[in-house]
Length: 307
Image (cartoon, rainbow, N blue to C red; front, side, top):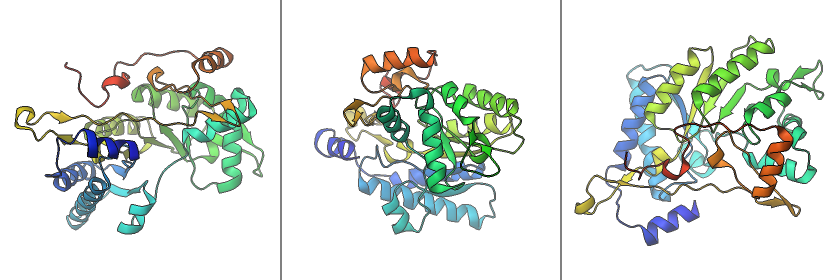
C-alpha cells in the first residue's frame, strides 16, 4: 500500500481522479446485474487512500441502485479494509493469507504437513467460521492431500474439506482449478454445495467468465476484486491520452521466520517467492509439477506489453 501510494504521489504523477467514482459505479452495476457477489480487495495496490474512498462510494451507489431496481442475487459483500468497513458500515471480509502457511512451514520445517497444521490451528481458533481455505501456498495438489484428512478437533470427526465452506483460487488457470476442485469433492464423496472465491487479478469480464465456469460445475462463487477497482487509471498527458497508467505489481510476503527461509510455491511459477534454493529443494520434496498458463506472465499482468 505505502509503496504504491508513494510511487504514484512522487514518481508517476501523470494522472488525476477524474471519473473514478463513476467508473467504480459502472463496474459495480455490471457485476451486480450479472448476479456476482463480490468484495473490494484493493488496499494493497491502491493508487491512494482517496482512490479507495471514491471506489467504495461508487460501489455503494451501485448497490443502492441495484436494490432500488429490485435486483436479487448480486451483492457488494464488503471490503478487506477494516478502516473503510467501519467508515462505510460494510462487512470487513477476507480469507487466510499465504503467510499463515508459509510461517508454519518455515518454523516446523515440515512442508508436507504444513497445510494440515495451518488448517487445524485455524479451526482451533475460529471453529467452522471464516472457513474459506487458501489452496496454493505450496501448490494446490499438495494442499488437497491435507484437505481430505480428518480434523481431530471435531467430534464426530470431519475432514477439513467437509468443515470448510469452500476454497480461494489465487493463482494458475481458474478453469483448470474449477475442474480440479470438482474432481476432488466428487472423489471424497462431498455432495454439499461448496464455494470458490476467486481473487487473482480480476476484472468484470473475468468475474463473469469464472462465475459461469464454476456454477456450471455446481459451485457457488464469490469474487475479491482489487487492483482493477483501486488502480485503474489513464494518463492525463495529451500525448498519452487514453493510454493506461499501469499499476505496480506488488507482491510482499514474509522472507523468514525465526531465521529460517519462508517460501511460497504458487500454482503460477511467476508468483513463487522466497529463497530460490529452498524453493527448488521443497519442489523436489513435494513432487511439485510446473504448469504453464498463457495468462500467467506476471510481468505484464496489468498492461504495458504490446499485443
